Length: 104
Length: 114
Image: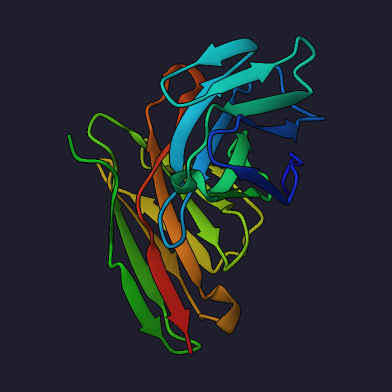
Protein backbone atom coordinates (compact mmCIF):
# COMPACT_ATOMS: atom_id res chain seq x y z
CA UNK A 1 0.00 0.00 0.00
CA UNK A 2 1.20 3.49 -0.82
CA UNK A 3 2.38 5.47 2.14
CA UNK A 4 1.91 8.83 0.46
CA UNK A 5 -1.09 10.92 -0.57
CA UNK A 6 -1.17 13.46 -3.38
CA UNK A 7 -3.89 15.22 -5.42
CA UNK A 8 -5.26 13.23 -8.32
CA UNK A 9 -5.06 16.03 -10.85
CA UNK A 10 -4.10 19.66 -11.37
CA UNK A 11 -4.50 22.12 -14.20
CA UNK A 12 -2.23 25.04 -15.00
CA UNK A 13 -1.36 27.43 -17.82
CA UNK A 14 1.89 27.92 -19.63
CA UNK A 15 4.32 30.17 -17.81
CA UNK A 16 2.80 29.64 -14.38
CA UNK A 17 4.49 28.12 -11.35
CA UNK A 18 3.00 24.81 -10.25
CA UNK A 19 3.23 23.38 -6.75
CA UNK A 20 2.29 19.76 -6.09
CA UNK A 21 2.16 18.58 -2.48
CA UNK A 22 2.51 15.05 -1.16
CA UNK A 23 1.77 13.97 2.40
CA UNK A 24 4.16 11.62 4.20
CA UNK A 25 2.35 10.84 7.43
CA UNK A 26 4.47 7.82 8.38
CA UNK A 27 7.83 8.59 6.83
CA UNK A 28 10.77 6.78 8.43
CA UNK A 29 13.69 8.70 9.87
CA UNK A 30 16.13 7.53 7.21
CA UNK A 31 13.82 7.80 4.17
CA UNK A 32 14.47 10.37 1.48
CA UNK A 33 11.66 11.85 -0.61
CA UNK A 34 11.96 11.59 -4.38
CA UNK A 35 9.79 12.95 -7.17
CA UNK A 36 9.38 11.46 -10.64
CA UNK A 37 7.73 12.53 -13.88
CA UNK A 38 6.09 10.01 -16.17
CA UNK A 39 4.82 10.38 -19.71
CA UNK A 40 2.47 7.81 -21.26
CA UNK A 41 4.16 4.53 -22.17
CA UNK A 42 7.48 5.59 -20.66
CA UNK A 43 9.32 4.79 -17.45
CA UNK A 44 9.30 7.34 -14.62
CA UNK A 45 12.01 9.99 -14.90
CA UNK A 46 13.86 11.26 -11.83
CA UNK A 47 13.19 14.94 -11.10
CA UNK A 48 14.54 15.75 -7.66
CA UNK A 49 15.24 14.27 -4.24
CA UNK A 50 15.57 15.67 -0.74
CA UNK A 51 15.65 14.86 2.94
CA UNK A 52 14.66 18.15 4.54
CA UNK A 53 14.54 21.92 3.89
CA UNK A 54 14.88 23.02 0.28
CA UNK A 55 16.60 21.46 -2.70
CA UNK A 56 16.82 23.07 -6.13
CA UNK A 57 18.10 21.81 -9.46
CA UNK A 58 17.82 22.98 -13.04
CA UNK A 59 14.22 21.83 -13.46
CA UNK A 60 12.50 22.01 -10.06
CA UNK A 61 12.61 22.82 -6.37
CA UNK A 62 11.60 20.58 -3.51
CA UNK A 63 10.43 21.92 -0.17
CA UNK A 64 10.33 19.65 2.87
CA UNK A 65 9.29 21.14 6.24
CA UNK A 66 11.07 20.32 9.47
CA UNK A 67 8.53 17.68 10.51
CA UNK A 68 8.92 15.96 7.08
CA UNK A 69 5.21 15.12 7.01
CA UNK A 70 4.84 16.65 3.56
CA UNK A 71 6.83 17.65 0.51
CA UNK A 72 6.09 20.15 -2.23
CA UNK A 73 7.43 19.90 -5.74
CA UNK A 74 7.65 23.30 -7.40
CA UNK A 75 7.88 23.57 -11.20
CA UNK A 76 8.70 27.13 -12.32
CA UNK A 77 7.15 28.50 -15.52
CA UNK A 78 5.61 25.30 -16.84
CA UNK A 79 5.22 24.60 -20.55
CA UNK A 80 2.92 22.29 -22.51
CA UNK A 81 5.63 19.62 -22.42
CA UNK A 82 5.34 19.44 -18.63
CA UNK A 83 1.94 17.76 -19.01
CA UNK A 84 2.55 14.42 -17.32
CA UNK A 85 1.91 12.40 -14.17
CA UNK A 86 4.05 13.35 -11.18
CA UNK A 87 4.79 10.87 -8.41
CA UNK A 88 6.29 11.22 -4.97
CA UNK A 89 8.26 8.23 -3.73
CA UNK A 90 9.05 7.16 -0.19
CA UNK A 91 10.71 3.90 0.82
CA UNK A 92 10.33 2.31 -2.62
CA UNK A 93 6.58 3.03 -2.63
CA UNK A 94 4.90 5.42 -5.05
CA UNK A 95 1.91 7.58 -4.41
CA UNK A 96 -1.05 7.39 -6.79
CA UNK A 97 0.34 10.24 -8.84
CA UNK A 98 -0.85 13.72 -9.78
CA UNK A 99 -1.88 14.21 -13.39
CA UNK A 100 -0.77 17.74 -14.36
CA UNK A 101 -2.31 19.28 -17.44
CA UNK A 102 -0.71 22.45 -18.76
CA UNK A 103 -2.95 24.50 -21.04
CA UNK A 104 -1.91 27.14 -23.58
CA UNK B 1 26.75 5.78 -20.19
CA UNK B 2 23.95 3.27 -20.71
CA UNK B 3 20.86 3.70 -18.67
CA UNK B 4 18.59 0.92 -17.47
CA UNK B 5 17.66 -1.39 -20.34
CA UNK B 6 14.81 -3.86 -20.41
CA UNK B 7 13.73 -6.63 -22.76
CA UNK B 8 11.49 -7.46 -24.41
CA UNK B 9 9.61 -4.19 -24.88
CA UNK B 10 6.31 -5.89 -25.67
CA UNK B 11 5.03 -9.42 -25.40
CA UNK B 12 1.77 -11.34 -25.40
CA UNK B 13 1.20 -14.46 -23.33
CA UNK B 14 -1.70 -16.80 -22.68
CA UNK B 15 -3.26 -17.40 -19.28
CA UNK B 16 -1.39 -20.08 -17.36
CA UNK B 17 1.87 -19.54 -19.19
CA UNK B 18 5.11 -18.32 -17.67
CA UNK B 19 7.09 -15.21 -18.62
CA UNK B 20 10.63 -13.97 -18.04
CA UNK B 21 11.55 -10.31 -18.28
CA UNK B 22 15.12 -9.06 -18.29
CA UNK B 23 16.87 -5.97 -17.02
CA UNK B 24 20.37 -4.54 -17.19
CA UNK B 25 21.05 -1.86 -14.60
CA UNK B 26 22.56 1.54 -15.21
CA UNK B 27 26.34 1.41 -15.40
CA UNK B 28 27.84 1.44 -11.91
CA UNK B 29 24.64 0.36 -10.15
CA UNK B 30 24.43 -2.81 -8.09
CA UNK B 31 20.78 -2.98 -7.00
CA UNK B 32 17.75 -3.79 -9.11
CA UNK B 33 14.10 -3.25 -8.23
CA UNK B 34 11.01 -4.35 -10.12
CA UNK B 35 7.65 -2.62 -10.32
CA UNK B 36 4.29 -3.45 -11.87
CA UNK B 37 2.24 -0.61 -13.31
CA UNK B 38 -1.31 -1.36 -14.39
CA UNK B 39 -2.99 1.00 -16.80
CA UNK B 40 -3.88 4.26 -15.08
CA UNK B 41 -2.23 3.28 -11.82
CA UNK B 42 1.01 4.16 -10.08
CA UNK B 43 3.92 1.71 -10.07
CA UNK B 44 3.63 -1.00 -7.42
CA UNK B 45 6.81 -2.33 -5.83
CA UNK B 46 7.38 -6.04 -6.44
CA UNK B 47 10.84 -6.70 -5.00
CA UNK B 48 14.44 -5.58 -4.86
CA UNK B 49 17.64 -7.54 -5.43
CA UNK B 50 21.08 -6.81 -4.10
CA UNK B 51 24.10 -9.14 -3.99
CA UNK B 52 22.00 -11.74 -5.82
CA UNK B 53 19.47 -11.95 -3.02
CA UNK B 54 15.94 -10.64 -2.60
CA UNK B 55 16.19 -7.85 0.00
CA UNK B 56 12.72 -6.35 0.07
CA UNK B 57 9.37 -7.54 -1.25
CA UNK B 58 6.06 -5.85 -1.84
CA UNK B 59 2.63 -7.42 -1.60
CA UNK B 60 2.92 -9.82 -4.52
CA UNK B 61 2.28 -13.59 -4.55
CA UNK B 62 4.96 -16.23 -4.89
CA UNK B 63 4.12 -16.53 -8.59
CA UNK B 64 6.39 -13.53 -8.94
CA UNK B 65 10.03 -14.44 -8.52
CA UNK B 66 13.32 -12.99 -9.55
CA UNK B 67 16.99 -13.45 -9.89
CA UNK B 68 20.07 -11.28 -9.95
CA UNK B 69 23.22 -12.36 -11.71
CA UNK B 70 26.86 -11.62 -10.77
CA UNK B 71 26.97 -8.84 -13.38
CA UNK B 72 24.02 -7.19 -11.52
CA UNK B 73 21.52 -7.84 -14.30
CA UNK B 74 18.19 -9.28 -13.25
CA UNK B 75 15.22 -11.31 -14.37
CA UNK B 76 11.61 -11.18 -13.29
CA UNK B 77 9.64 -14.41 -13.65
CA UNK B 78 5.89 -14.69 -13.41
CA UNK B 79 4.29 -18.14 -13.35
CA UNK B 80 0.71 -19.20 -13.99
CA UNK B 81 -0.16 -15.91 -15.66
CA UNK B 82 -3.52 -14.32 -14.96
CA UNK B 83 -5.35 -11.73 -17.03
CA UNK B 84 -4.73 -9.30 -14.18
CA UNK B 85 -0.99 -9.61 -14.68
CA UNK B 86 -1.30 -7.52 -17.82
CA UNK B 87 0.73 -4.41 -17.08
CA UNK B 88 3.88 -2.43 -17.70
CA UNK B 89 6.75 -4.01 -15.79
CA UNK B 90 9.40 -1.52 -14.81
CA UNK B 91 12.94 -2.20 -13.74
CA UNK B 92 14.88 0.34 -11.72
CA UNK B 93 18.48 0.36 -10.58
CA UNK B 94 20.40 2.10 -7.84
CA UNK B 95 23.69 2.02 -5.98
CA UNK B 96 23.80 0.85 -2.39
CA UNK B 97 25.31 3.48 -0.14
CA UNK B 98 24.35 6.33 -2.43
CA UNK B 99 22.56 8.93 -0.26
CA UNK B 100 18.84 8.67 -0.85
CA UNK B 101 19.32 5.44 -2.82
CA UNK B 102 17.96 7.19 -5.92
CA UNK B 103 16.46 4.70 -8.36
CA UNK B 104 16.50 5.15 -12.13
CA UNK B 105 13.98 3.44 -14.36
CA UNK B 106 14.04 1.70 -17.68
CA UNK B 107 11.28 2.16 -20.26
CA UNK B 108 9.52 -1.03 -19.21
CA UNK B 109 8.22 -4.23 -20.70
CA UNK B 110 4.58 -4.30 -21.74
CA UNK B 111 2.98 -7.65 -20.91
CA UNK B 112 -0.44 -8.55 -22.26
CA UNK B 113 -2.07 -11.74 -21.00
CA UNK B 114 -4.89 -13.09 -23.14
